[in-house]
Image 1 (tube, one colour):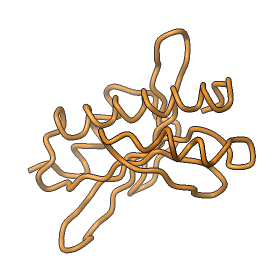
Image 2: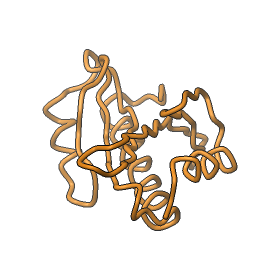
Image 3: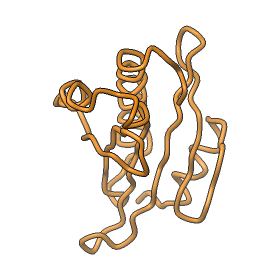
Image 4: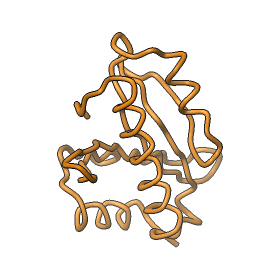
Length: 130
């Protein structure tokens, strides 16, 4: 069984942690072409009797992106969904922590989500702000 501490340690060992609280991490991944992408992982305790983790990555500020196009691009079926939080357009994915295989059910969705978020950010803003 994977714990929130396992997730924290996994991230700390592999990525540059930018900010951390007891139930939240923000970190940066290096991507091809000297691009980077920020990611947040939230611990969602006791949701429906289970603990969950939520992975999210910003693609742009809502006042700077075409939200309709963002939703179209975010609609691919592989993982996650789209949200607006604190003025940022985000891609998100949630998984139960209890059944989490760190490699298969955290790292794989993390890398897919980050690649998609970076591609959408590049398409919608032509920038690399996140």
